[in-house]
Length: 287
Image (tube, rainbow, N blue to C red):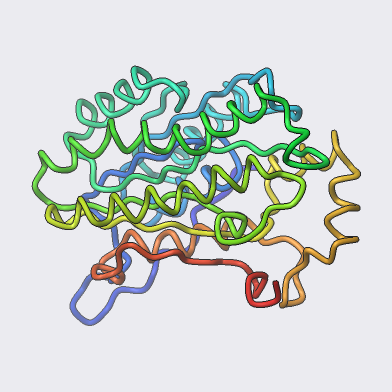
């Protein structure tokens, strides 16, 4: 079944919605499925041209199935079938050369980059942080933290050269703002993203490039489903520890995060930078 774009936001009296992205180009890492796919569809519906990338291959230390080349092609096809413009590339955020290739693709295909969604990430579990294997720890930081930095490192120079400013949204987590029992390496990586965001917001403000994070609670994505299938005790432990939300919802949908991302990258948030935006159904308030 082909998913259609969400409805376009109604035009204001001036003829343009504050969340219109007409003429802008957005690069999305980890865009083959889940939140990344929802972001691609949502931003394209608002008028942005999309460049999407994903590793689209297994990573040895990740226990659940990652996105495939077919998932990446499906995201590209969904955007095209809904009338959007998109280019895609299989690329690993752990590779500076791959991220440079993504930046080059965006510049050659669409001539500019206005938006970066550093969304790629993986998850994992261990009974305690001191029991995490060295390779698992390193992979978590390489993908979730260094991968976001390498994406920014490749994309930001194109933004600066364009002279139009820009917006970067880094996908963090509630676990970047508090304790992350049973996945300390995930929490450490996500906490690192908060520091990366603060520093980039400070450094890039002079170029009118805004940098923010979104910090979701649990999201009903293939990542969450895959983790719960291979490690069902994780879900039980999560519930036993009452790691639940304040509002009566267990898992958010990817679209819930995309709606917040659309606001952050739009002119409606043109003076918003350096913030953590929890989309957490009250999780952080409760905990």
